[in-house]
Image 1 (cartoon, rainbow, N blue to C red):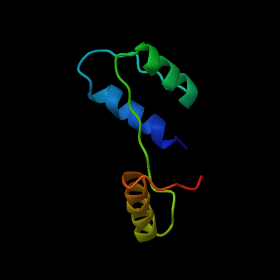
Image 2: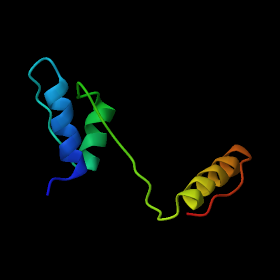
Image 3: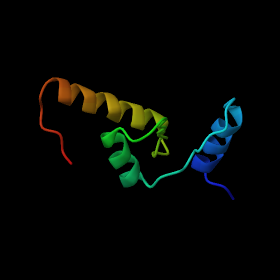
Length: 75
């Protein structure tokens, strides 16, 4: 079974009009290449990692408010 990352990569590659050299990178390598500017295109995605979507959204807004008001955020 293909990972979602590979499926997205194949979809993008198929949608581009010109031949492409898309290459999946481990996350650390991706960050290193981005920081050097050594890329033509970069993609990153995120998906929820909580079973309860409302709890996840609430925790994001709570964190945002703590950062805004300069409160200490637990690791």
